[in-house]
Image (tube, rainbow, N blue to C red; front, side, top):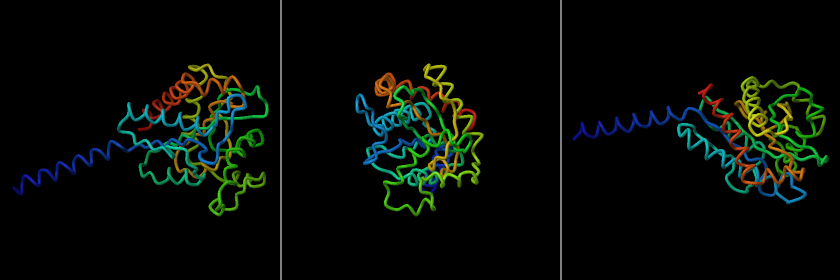
Length: 254
């Protein structure tokens, strides 16, 4: 009797150890905006960025889980709820796996209605003046929050971005490699207009302790891109591109 129970206990322990060892890699997929923060809104079809981001994020999560069940896939949000930028980073940092990857999904907008194409950002200040408008737009969600003390004096003003010049990102090389793979998929496979891999001062990347990228899938302010991005074919194409890039990154870093 004792030996039977002992063997069962050993079997449970072994199974648990094997399961934990299998899930030693975590990918956190962040659907930008949500709740009372709609993000950008398409002028032609009225598509809200928050909904598009969430749809793509959930589809991507499903693809990864289906092919790589050993990977722990975490969505920062699975419904139309508001999360602070710091909340999103906290979710990443609470994941205990030594190997993590952060993917933040967004949709772009510009005053120029002809602006088009996909771009992938990593944390950095190279050519900061060129990318300041995107960073300020994505960081502006801070103004919708009640408690700004978590941002340590950062108020999304131009002066605040000087602080990023003094901060180092330990994961820049890995982030850059992943971002370049994503852009290659978007350009070579999806034939998207290439806006390149760029650096910007995104709070959510700064505070996430792992390699990470912020993807701007396309311009919802462009009528043609809004139509394509909101279509099943468009969303599937974007998911396929990001998944292919993840697959390459995972195989090289697991």
